[in-house]
Image (cartoon, rainbow, N blue to C red):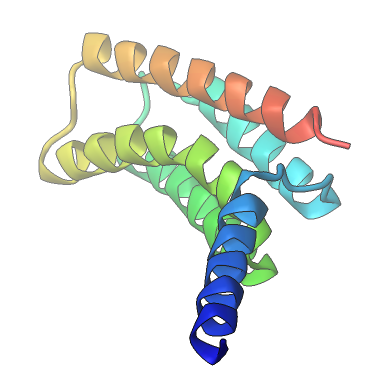
Length: 129
């Protein structure tokens, strides 16, 4: 009987943690403001100016968003997943810009991608209740 109870409790606890990760997180003023900061910085990228400092500011905001969300706890996995593709795009852009300045075409292409990714992430983040 003790074994059955132990198995049942283990199954329930495991099931609860799986369910918690599927429930969307709630509205957060700080996350909402920061994702708009990311979107604003992405749209303001000027490909005629040095790219690295501009990209680093976006990367810093994304890192802030990630750390803040992780600090809030398990229920934030949905918003963390939202920014992962954008973080990867920005990381690649930052690494390339650190080695040598990318062409204007490269910058404009990356900018379009990051602007679209930030738009989608902002809509999802701001659309929560």
